[in-house]
Image 1 (spheres, rainbow, N blue to C red):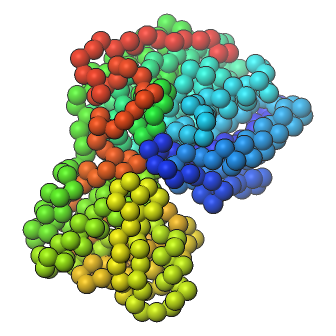
Image 2: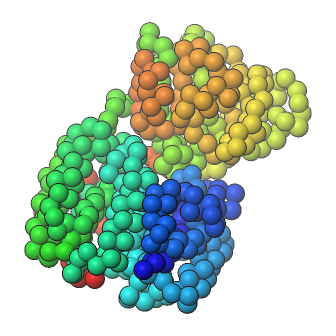
Length: 486
Ligand SMILES: [Zn+2]
């Protein structure tokens, strides 16, 4: 028997706290063979599975997705799915991040999952594979037969997760289970990723529980979602899902898992040293450790920040003007399309810029500086770029939103050694591996922005209540929602 499986989806994390609108230029679209190639494990199934690629869109985390872009994408996705269904379909691998916001939608992936179910009917299996920073609404849960997500943060198991979602679907199609139950518990906890890494406690122990649970023979899958904290929507909070062939065991396991998640809530701490911006800069300037990294956490494009904020740069310029800056500093990076145009158009060594601060001017707008251009370079993702200097302060400027997370990216910019600089300011939360290896000192500066780490002081209008840590003293409702799904 050849099973016909449709594959497609959309992958973006959208902060609703930035005015930046994600659209055409932010997404990389895959169709046809490109989709199949991005799931190499499917090759093993070529004798029993026919893959029907739909369309897949993927973007760097950003702002809310424009209705225009989304409607175009959704029409293509659903048209291709309808065609596949009319030609016979057994399953859908619904490949999403789970924290997409679309203009005028409160639950983009949930609404989409309902539409998918309407098209394919009840006989087709929908297996949903996600990022653990995604959110599970009741609609998404009820429309999917299987749901799973990554078990590591930083994520090193993306492909393994998709493969597991795919294998579990094939197992069900092949009749390995007489019946299948799926259960969900919503956990009223919402925490930033900088507190919930699976490499340190308590994230490590919590996620390790999944292996034990899955050792039980009747359990098909177990998964924990941390949820996405920078979207003002009721669906944003933790969730756990357990799937298995024995209703009693599924119930038992999910109760253990959800209680453990809740009981760990007070132990989630920032995974590195944090401080406010002023103290962070002062600490870096005083430190003899070189290079000393400062994470500009509120403007982390890896979570949805604009990537063009100049709050730290403005403060550093103030230090330089007061003559208190005797260190060489690199700011990596500031997204600014207009400044790049100017640098490339004038082709002068010295250029006057109104740099950054354009996407969300509420944080002070651009800084005015006359810089020296040290290096011009290009990058597939970052676009046209320039390395510029202003006294002791060096700045990488990029045309597109980008995150300087790898050694290779710095080398491309013309930075030979991290240790050429005393202080390196990066737009991220926890340091990516290359940077972490190079760093001799580090602080996460709790800066404002679209992905402000100080969640409880941000203005939410639509979140659920009560929700930890916004509210602290309450008894959680950990009721199990369980459904026979096959
Ligand atoms: Zn994630």
